[in-house]
Image (cartoon, rainbow, N blue to C red; front, side, top):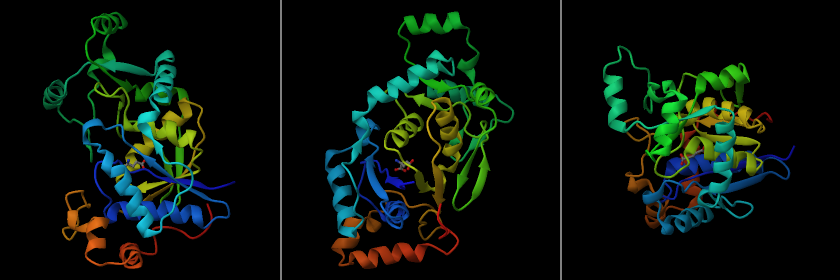
Length: 291
Ligand code: GLU
């Protein structure tokens, strides 16, 4: 098997040390195998926050660090037809439903629930629109009511049966459909969303090893379900620890001082920047045994 990995930043800012860790993990996973490929994907569907200068800035930062990639970088904004096709397939099989709720309605619904389930990303959708009749759905759609499309997670798992995925660091993990609940697969405003786009693109780019920060571990539960529903291959996963700031919080783009551009201007060499990343890692994060 030829190993194919990817680094998938959003061009909404320059890279900081947290991104460099993600890029380096994916780069090294590919480069340690003969013929391994490391790809770059710009996850640029998040409209207004994306800026043209950041595509180039990200590529410049990676080049400076010597984290060279193969093939032409993929831009998700060129892939909407593929996301629509995947959504149509899920719609035909009645595995998604239109959600007409506004953010405020969801909050109001959650406020009256005794124990609303929460994730690190926020509360899980309470399922309001899952229970609408087909007739009501059609009426609202025909009236042009703005809507997202949500995965019916329970229905999906009843079709796929129990699922699991393998993480090189964390071992085998059983999929829990309730973890993120009925996630949005197509947003009201942009017609697609991270979970569907990432699964469709990982399959399109023949990614064999998906590495990313452990903040996205819960998302992988959803991704395994989608891969199974859409007959897509199952990659191996590696969720790595995050680079933390001095308060133990994950680095955010506002930590401009740790952007690669700033470190570079302060006179740091690429080798020193990469050494800072190595210092972040302890020996347990990535087994050196082959996948
Ligand atoms: N675009 C995501 C990020 O910047 C990465 C998603 C992924 O690797 O699956 O955090």
